[in-house]
Image (cartoon, rainbow, N blue to C red; front, side, top):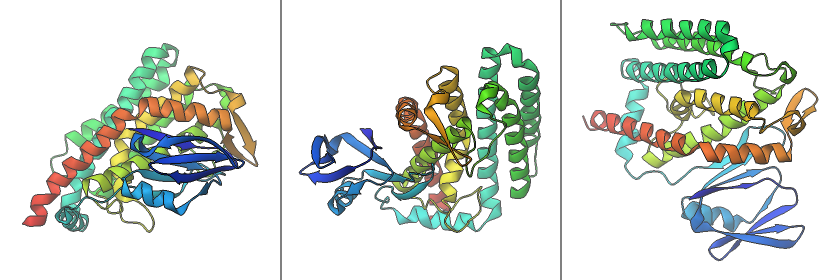
Length: 317
């Protein structure tokens, strides 16, 4: 199974039997059999037959629409929900209990810490000239991890978020040194992303978040009820939870894209302070993302199934 990225102006998509037919300026350019697809990612203003959405839903093919002006998702179809509603009952009960949420949240923060440490250790091996900032951040992460692992009474959710925030600040404080000064990357900035690194991080996190939403639906959990992120209007809190340990992996992929010069300054443009990937840059990003993300998607489902198994006895009790 594979992903289909549709990122071209004047493109129309129609259903042609058991395939998607692609039209450009009224001319048929090709077809893609539905049985080969696992997800379809659309960017910008593409014409779509309503029958296409029905066919994708029937075959459990995901569908994500990205804004043409930013890297944010504007619409999505995830997957058919799992039929076992008992899992969701257990999730609803867990979401109301800080005692039930705390051990899961602690595991998540420690898993993210391990990912951040791997990222910085790999960076140190590749950039020994940056030993001072990288080892400083590694020492901070090691200290936070030791504190959390040694805690016998259980820190509160707000304290866990404080530790996670301190770890993220330390990691990004060192991470920014990995990029050329010409990229103007000084730290994580989201809306709008002002530089090429932030533009790539935002796009990558959006794609990874969608894969996390799909994983939630696949295993029968509500993506909006998390255990680390509180319930917030319009936020897929559980999807945010599941992808949190994988953020350092995305950070590493973005570093490699620039380190290996797969992406360069000519692949970006500035639009009133918003940094945008151009068409060639997006193609390069999509290709690299798909070449790397398979293991992350499997991990997301593994996390989801592990959580669902943990919730079921609670729901039946």
